[in-house]
Amino acid sequence: IEATKDGVEGITGLTIQYFVLVNMEGFIELIDALGGITVDVPESVELVDGSDDDLQYHGTIEAGEQHMDGQTALWYARSRKTTSDYDRMERQRLIEKAIIAQFSPSVIVSKFQEVAQATSATLQTDIPQVLVSTMVDLAEGMQSYDVQSLELTPDNGIVTADPDYATIHAMVAETVAAATTPAE
Image 1: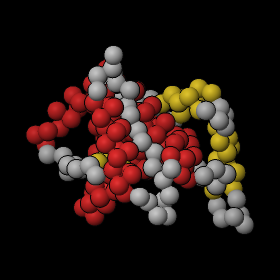
Image 2 (image 1 turned 45 degrees about the horizontal axis):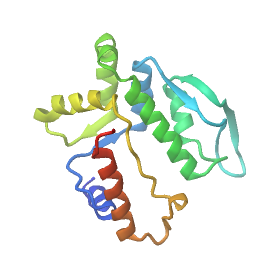
Image 3 (image 1 turned 30 degrees about the vertical axis):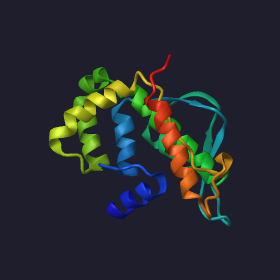
Image 4 (image 1 turned 30 degrees about the horizontal axis):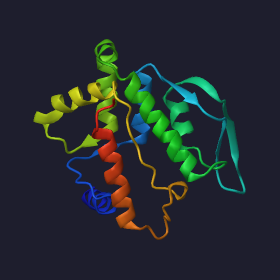
């Protein structure tokens, strides 16, 4: 964990204070505890796994608004046999945004037992206990903001095999500055 934090700090120029590690199998339980999530799927994705010699087809998630249970969301977020890693990362961001959008105080209260049980199996963090309520308040407040992201991909001019860290630092600083400037 510490090496990963150090690596992310070096690449982005940001200071990483805390981490949250998500267990992908527990991810299924969390989404199911929320009653599923609704995702606007931009393009159909085939759910395929196995080796190149023995591909196994598990169906298709069609384009359009889809309500997914935990297993379907995990398949959608992880499928990569028929698409690129960059496509997979974009799908993971869509799942994250859907969880954030649907993780409201009313859902937490109405499904507290299920969410608490799923969260304990899903998340590991070094956030001090005294800051948990503050972080929950921040998470609730995030729902009213447009979350900014920056993709460090070839489409954005980043050569992943030989990254220009000064350029990445500048891109990250620009994105953070834009995200902290109030909308007009």
